[in-house]
Image 1: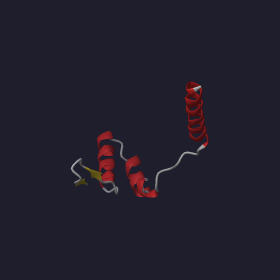
Image 2 (image 1 turned 90 degrees about the vertical axis):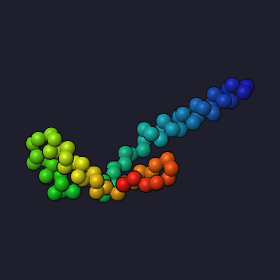
Image 3 (image 1 turned 120 degrees about the vertical axis):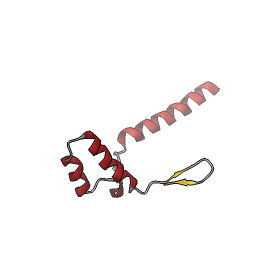
Image 4 (image 1 turned 135 degrees about the vertical axis):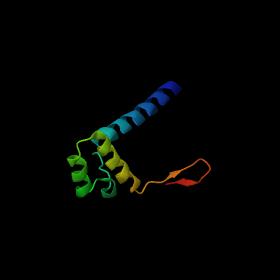
Length: 76
């Protein structure tokens, strides 16, 4: 009886999460994480891969992302 109860509880949780993951529409990133029109044009006009990478690095430095160290200090 205990195994049947545990199985059905796990089965219901699995079914619920599967249902939610299949029928929940995907989310899109916030506008502040998308490339601006000018940055996108600049990236697409550049043909060299190393220059494209440099453009993306410059854009990434402007993003509002902060990482915390294990000690609690901030990295920017």
